[in-house]
Length: 109
Image (tube, rainbow, N blue to C red; front, side):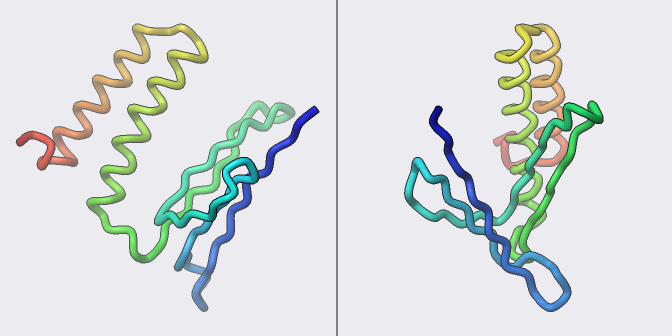
């Protein structure tokens, strides 16, 4: 059986606020930096979602809004692929459009 590793390294300031987030995947072989991560893990025993939500001091509010918008759309796609629930995925995409309309006015242009 093959295994693959994804490594996250978070550099913190004196107040434990992320200054830098680096990640690398063993299969990729390259290190990359990011301003934010949203990591969700399913705890099978507790039937609950565990999360790690981190963003650096450099992440702007506008970038965070765009990040969330893209995550909403990605979640809709993943949900549809995983469950076949096209109608609900479409409603999630509709919410993504509503979110963009109110949070990302530059997309209206």
